[in-house]
Amino acid sequence: AQSVTQLGSHVSVSEGALVLLRCNYSSSVPPYLFWYVQYPNQGLQLLLKYTTGATLVKGINGFEAEFKKSETSFHLTKPSAHMSDAAEYFCAVSGEGNKLVFGAGTILRVKS
Amino acid sequence: DTEVTQTPKHLVMGMTNKKSLKCEQHMGHRAMYWYKQKAKKPPELMFVYSYEKLSINESVPSRFSPECPNSSLLNLHLHALQPEDSALYLCASSQDIWRGGELFFGEGSRLTVL
Image (tube, rainbow over all chains, first blue to last red; front, top):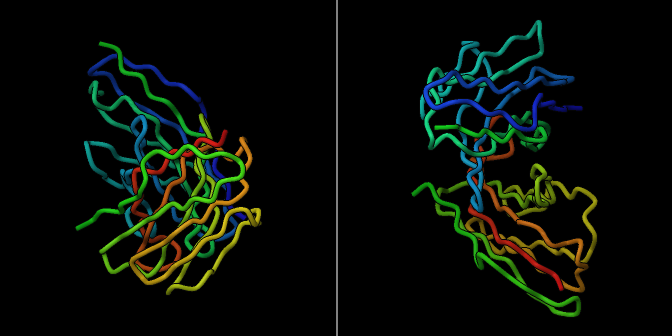
């Protein structure tokens, strides 16, 4: 079985500051991990994913995440926050049938 | 074309109504999904179709009835819903159901049951 825990339901950063959103996973098989972003009243957009290979994954809009097996983590970072980054972010793990199991989500607020 | 299109965007229905949600993709994907997202919660899987056949049903009540008429279309038929079924219903598609494939999501249909 797979599960995801996102630490912090709300994160607030200043514009230009580092963004760090935390995700820990549990998986009985080698994990395939995803970060999705959801803007208000919209669907989900893929930011990045890890399947195999390089553990540092670069995504869209300047985001990246590092897969750390020893820590069962897949934290999302961005060096400099922009106002347009304000949204809800979901970490997810892929299970059988390509079923995505999502974490509870983290709402990112960017202060000017 | 990398879009998943859902209609209607908003739907209000009574508990005795019958309505349908529609989803369409033209990316040649062979897997399609329905997710339900309650307010302030993550999406939860309802159904998975693979090559137009139902692959996964996450013990969804029978008042929700999915249908996949062809590889591009996915419907969700709604009947005798309850107010607690009010939610955002998200459709998604992927190349196939192999683990790790990217899911492309539509913008959702927001359902309100009175």
